[in-house]
Length: 158
Image (cartoon, rainbow, N blue to C red; front, side, top):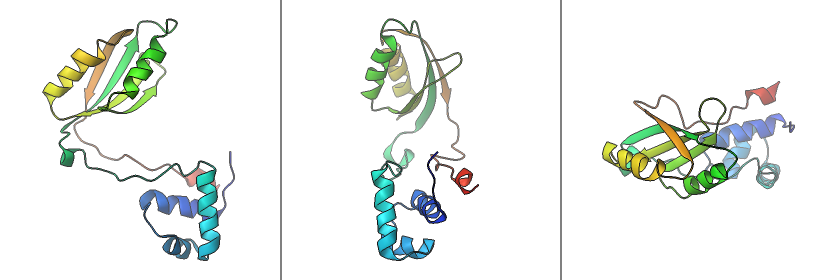
């Protein structure tokens, strides 16, 4: 596991909550001068620890009223189905995240669409028609309590 000092841990924690914070303010908050703070910031980016910055959008404000998690099981893992499925999912704008999973299902998809009718069309006419898909299990999100979240950092302070 990489080693981080207190300055870097504080920096990562602050940046997860406000990625637009100027380096001068960041330096002041973590207790460094601007130049060393900027160097550490750049080193964290170059090391791939800070992967990027993005705006967090309200799905409802852009008309995506239905949020679901969809578990997908494939027929086989030995016929190229997983690779084909992954390639297809990467082209689907409705799928915001996709994970491979252990257990009864092979993949977990996080999907957002404007309506239940759009969800039906997505599942029945696109997802279920992908080669190798055996079955899907859809779970409607009623309320998002927490997330999308930050990466926990408390284990680095031990």
